[in-house]
Amino acid sequence: MLQAQISSFSTIISGAKNIVIVSHKSPDGDSVGSSMALYYFLINQGLAAEVSVCHPDPAPSFIRWADAENVILNFEEQQEAVSAKIKAADVLICLDFNDLSRVGDAMAAELLSSGAKKIMIDHHLKPSFDQFDLSISFPEKSSTCELLMEVMLAAEGEKFIDAIVGERLYLGIVTDTGSFRFNSVRKRTHELAAMLIDKGVNHTQVHERTFDDNTLERLQLRSYILSSCMEVWGELKTAILFLTLEDANRFKMQKGDTEGLVNVALSIKGIERAAFFKEEKDHVRISFRSKESIAVNEIAAQYFNGGGHRQAAGGRFDGALKESISEFKRVLNEA
Image 1 (tube, rainbow, N blue to C red):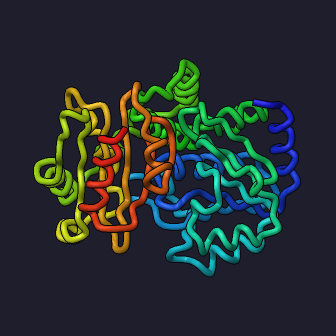
Image 2 (cartoon, one colour):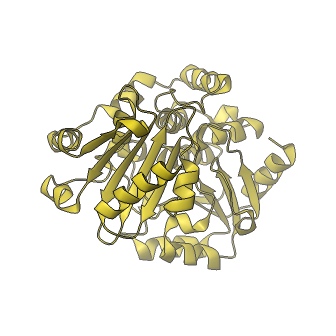
Image 3 (cartoon, rainbow, N blue to C red):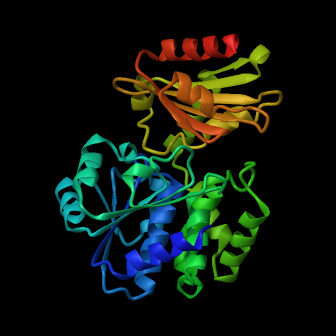
């Protein structure tokens, strides 16, 4: 990490009057964790600036514990309040995304029209550097929370990382690494996790709050998908899961209910690649995962209007569910 970047970050923050922390649409553990960790980190410093957190839409229930004080405003339900925060901001800190389009068209338009200094802190590939005044982009980091913690430490802010900040950093790290099993995990990842435990983080409690908070309906939905909506293509070493809009409504699916389910398909013996196809009103949302020797981000980018990391990517298909699955199989057969 370049010291010049850290120096610029510290200078911008210290001179700010209204800081707004923003993250991507469809929030996950890393986006919520990094947003709330940075919020409490800045509060701990006693800055004169007002600090706010504005997201495009609500977080799924299993990670809302990270915002127990209801700090986060969301554009979907509180558009007027979020718009006012963005207009008043002189610094926008964009976490866990590398292009303003990731917040949705309407909110992106407001961010683009803002005259505030824009800082990006992110670990995704192919960032849009031209959209930001300062970019701290390190795709080799396992999560934005890992990268954010490195920024905090490099800015000599270790004393402001307490158990509250640490729990949220740990949330982002543990969710984006698949509980430390993805190949993005390095020795340094574990060193930072150990440092957070030394800060008072109860890692067991973070894991239980996040992964052991199932509703009966959520388990029934997941069981149904695994038993009735899975195909295994042995010759392609690929497994797919799918969910129709009708079934999602029938099981009263809530945001986050299918989180991580694609990894269950990937865990099947002999499977090296998995995908989950979720039908929405006018398109199909796709999650891709793979094991170490296989890349899925190129398939997502080239054929499904998406992208992401080598072994964890997302995409979109503008058509019917069956057509999206057929297209994926065609692509694999041709490859």
